[in-house]
Length: 117
Image (cartoon, rainbow, N blue to C red):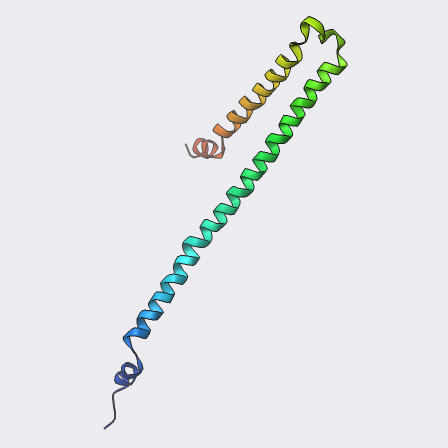
């Protein structure tokens, strides 16, 4: 007696093999759609954090250089006016911080919002 074609397919199939295929498919999907984007996002955030540290350190060195320049090149700022270079450098640092915060707050999202309205 000859078996129908669907019985041939079912005869070779096992439930365990089907579950294994589904599990492997699910694992591949989770890795591809969640784990890899999270890794990419983490790498992006790490580069941003390292870049921010370098830019901050560079700004600090520039401010220290400006302070040293003011203290060394202007003898009028010695004596009773020795606090003035510190005030000037602190004001410049405050301006840089305010400009940076303003740039962060008025980012691309606000520009897009204004374009759409």
